[in-house]
Length: 127
View 1 (cartoon, rainbow, N blue to C red):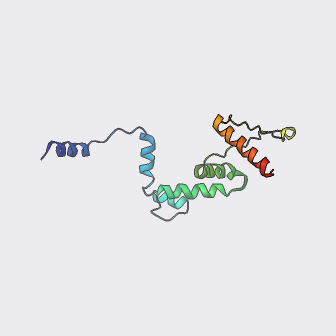
View 2 (view 1 turned 30 degrees about the horizontal axis):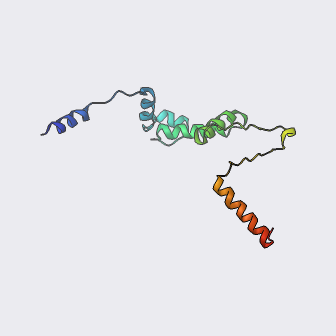
């Protein structure tokens, strides 16, 4: 067995310390089945996992009239992200916008060509 494969075998048994132990524990628990008494109290089928129970409870709360306003906001923000604040940049009086366009000066050679074209147009009577 090579040295690399020995190190790989050792590394498989070592778990890195998580930077989010609380979140990791919750995520791990979401796939576990809820106890029967909890399923019964929430009127859910036996064997329902915690993630599904939380989802159903959140949706039930969201449809409860005034009480569900905050829940609906939380659900929308978790799916779509926070709403951006709209800002009006111009007041009603400042609706007129002025654009100023400035061109760079043309190189000398280009100016000479343009002057020659103007002279030719004048000679030919094209204006």
